[in-house]
Image (cartoon, rainbow, N blue to C red; front, side, top):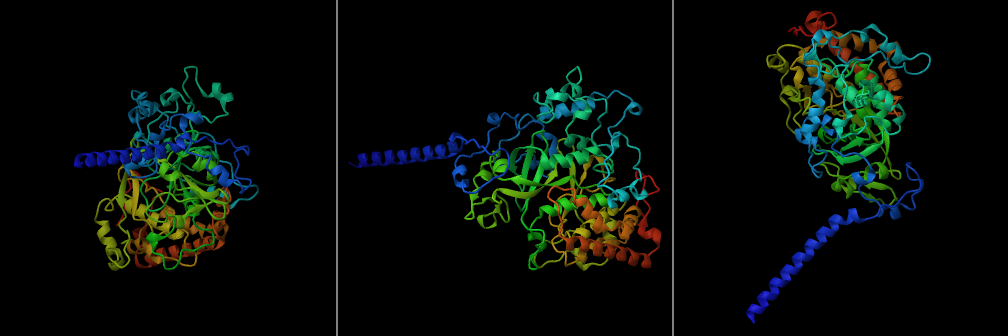
Length: 569
C-alpha cells in the first residue's frame, strides 16, 4: 500500500512537471503562432482610437524572414554608440551576433587593397566638391556665421595616421560582402547601373550616408564643416524606414536601438517631458530625466561653437505601433506594451530608473516624439578609450568631490597625464563651456578614439541632461575654467563673436533648430538663458586675464600646427 502511494505521488509530480513545461512552450510560441492582421490605413498613424484594443491582439514582433528584409546582422558590426563592448549586442534578450569576422574582413578589404600604393598618390576621402546649401532664403544669421573667417580656418593636412579609416576615393566596396544586399534604399533601382561598376562593385558615392560619416572622421573633427553627408544623414535619421528595434542594454533610462533599411543605426531617446517643463528643484542631477530635445539642441550648439564633436542627431515623430511594437524582436520590450485607460498605446521597457507602469511612455494615440543619434563606428573597427572626467561629481547625496573643496585642484591635474602636455586640458575646457551653456551637470566620463592617442578631440556623447533649468545657472560646471584659467584662442574668439548682436547665440540656435522636423526644439527661456550664460563665461575669462597675462590664459591654436602644439602652463 505504501509503495502504491509513493508511485502515485511520483506520477503526480511528473504530470505537474509536464504540464508546466507545456505551458512554458505554449507561452513562448504564442506570439509566433498569432496571425498578423492586415491594416488598410497605410503606413500612417492611427486615424482613430476605437479599434486599438481589437488590433492589439493581432500584432506581434515582426520576423525578418516574413518581412523580406536582409539578415539583421548585416553590417551592424560597423556601428556602435556605447563605450561598453558588450553593447555591440542590441539587447541581452536578443541572439548573439554571429559572423563578425566576415563583416570585419569585408571592411578591412577597403584598406588592404591599397596597402602597396605610395601615400603621396593616395587621395583620402574628404568633403568632395558638394557644399551644403545656405539655410533659409534671404539673410541668414547662420549662413553669415559660417562665412566668418573664424569658421573657415583649415585643419592641418591629413596623413594616414590622422584618419580613422584609411580608405581611398578610388576604392570600391563590393555589396556581395554584405550578404548580397544593396546599399541604396528601396526604390532606387533606376540608378543601379550608375551606382555600380561593370565589376559589380559599388562606387563610393553610392555608400549610405552613415558610412560616409564614419569614413570622414579624423583626428581633429567628427565631421568637416562642408561635409554633405552630415545633412543627408540628418534627413535619413528623420525619415528612413525603421527595420527593427531593440532595447539598449545598460544605462539608467530607457533607450532604443533602431536599425534602418540601409543598415544604419541610431539611438532613440523618447520624449519624457514637455518643452516648458523644468527639472524639479528637489531632483539630484543624477536622477534627472534625459530629454530628447536636449540631445537635438546639443548637436546644433556644438556645430555653432564649431567643435563638431557631437554625432548627428535629429528629431522624429515615431509611430509606436508600426515602427516599434510591430518591428521589434525583443520580447522583453514587446511584453511591456499596453493600452492606457485613455486608449493610448504605452510601453516602458527595462532600465534602472523610470521603467515601470507609473512612468510609461504613452503616445497620442500611438505617436511619440524622440531624438535619433547616429551611431559611431563599431568598437571592433575603431576602438574608443573611456576617461574619467577630472571634475567628475560625487554622485552622492551628501559627499562632495575633491575639486569642490580644493581651490588648487587644477594644479594637480596639470601634473597628471594626459593633462600635463598636449591639448587634452584645453579640450576639457571646451567641454566645460559646452556643458555650461546647456546646464549639463552629468559629465562623469568622456571618450576619445584610441587610434589618435592623446592628441585628439573629446567626443561629446550623451547630452540628454542638458536644458533642464532655464531659470538657474549652475556655476559649479564652470569650475575647470575658473581653476585652470586656460582656454583656446579659437574658442574664446568664437564666444566673443556669439556675444555680438549680429551673431547672437540664441538667434543662431533658434534658426538652426528650425531645420529639425519636430521644431520648435527649445522653449524660448532656454534660448535666452544661453545668452546669459555666454556672458558669464566671458566674465570668467576676463577675471582670469586680470590675474594672469594673456598668453598664460589664452592658448593660440589658430596660428600653430596642432600636431606640434603643447599646452602652456
